[in-house]
Image (cartoon, rainbow, N blue to C red; front, side, top):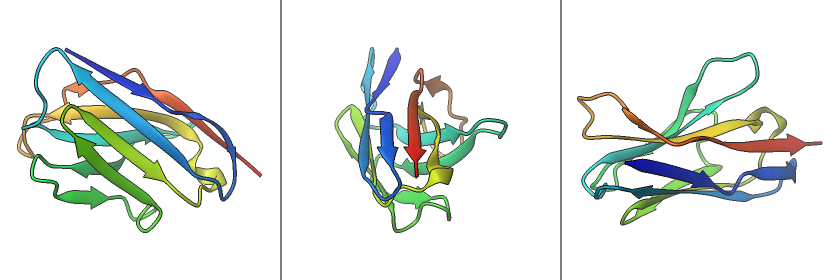
Length: 115
């Protein structure tokens, strides 16, 4: 089972970026999927999550700017109006349902927002 994240890069504040995470090894259509991020010196935090029924949840810091979506075994994170504080390594993750922990993790993709 693998989660492969991609799409990170160096952008300027105000720009947009879309991250993708493709799952392989099993069908994740029934799993909840999420994006987490970890900034330098900070703990990993949940950015957004989406259930198998497309119910979405966002961190307050990204509401109105980020959109999570999914298509079969791929989950996306559209990031608009990026801010300096969005700089982090972004990880995708999956779990069977909201009663279980996120136990499948991708390798992370770096997003750097410059001024």
